[in-house]
Image (cartoon, rainbow, N blue to C red; front, side, top):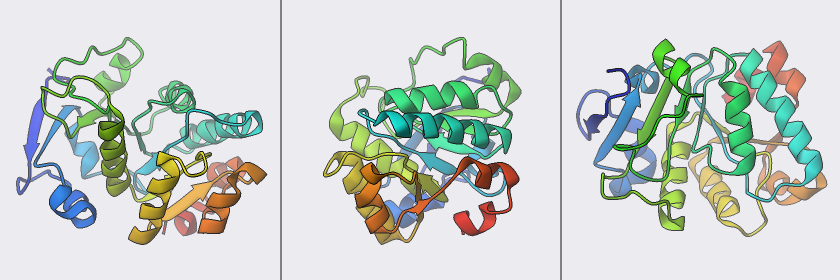
Length: 220
């Protein structure tokens, strides 16, 4: 079955080398995957874009994030995320309407994860991968697991889009790590994102994604 669990061990073909490159000894020894595992090694240009957004998000940024999600869908940009926060979940609903590759990374084991009806068509089309760095015993989401999941997602991504990160929160701390890795960080131009912009995050607009002309430079 397409969504039957598959284990990918370190040093085996198919294990993403970027996990070891960025996480070092903390890289998960085994990944559990359900869906099209080839999406890990053959994402369409410009590479996997990680999407993160804090739970509490200012209303103006919510509106802009919806527009960005639609633009990502229309431009068929491959997206990876935990899709756990309310804004991330809303973005997933938009992205599932498109045709681009999607990688969903829950902060728990996926051995017994129930596949929702919204996900099944994309699994059958081979454009969805559910990926977890956690063993079957890790069945509950915790803050520690969510933080590690986010680090794995960031390591797998070519660039990262963070519409909003609560100042001094867990996601803001991850942004510091992302910059130390030298990865491109994108965000929404808004006063609430002053910390992200000061960190060097690049403001991005939906029309930049839709035209496709700015994507190579934004993801390089």
